[in-house]
Every structure is written in structure tokens, then in C-alpha cells.
Length: 97
Image (tube, rainbow, N blue to C red):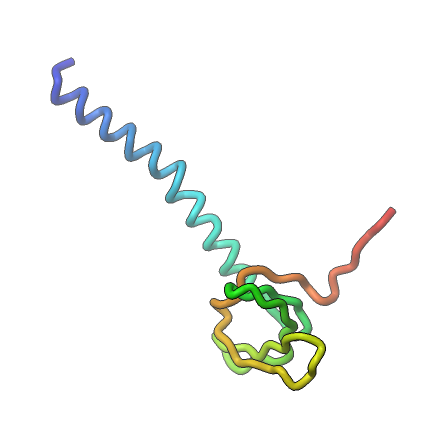
């Protein structure tokens, strides 16, 4: 094999590794986040990207929700669904055997 073929082969291998180590896991994470946003319901506990814990109290439209923060029932803030980092379903039953 000559030098040009080896260089091209090394570039292909590097791009392949980069895809499997960075791009593919990121796309998988985005798909999981998208699926989580589709299953978001009123009553679910959420963690925002800014680090606040709250409860979804209303859905305004496909992209906006109302989240209630803290024990004070007067702290309700409209926010984008994309600001949700993690979610825990309200009716998730814990099975302790």
C-alpha cells in the first residue's frame, strides 16, 4: 500500500471511531429526551436544566407547560418543555419486595 492509501484509510478509521464514540451516543440521548417530552403529563415531577425541582400543573400547548415550584402553591411558572432535564412519573409505583 502506498502512502496516500494509508492516509485515506486512517482518516476513514478515525471518522468511524468518532461517529461511534461521540455522534451515535448523542443521537441516542436526544431520542430518549424526545420520547420523555412526549410522555410528559400533568402531575409529573421534573428537574429543570437550571436545577429546580417542580411539578407539572398544566400543559399550555405542545411546547409550553406550567410548572409549580416548592411548597408555596403560588409559584407557578410557564416554561418550555425543552428546559426539562429529567422527569419522574407521578403514578410510578415503587415495588419493594
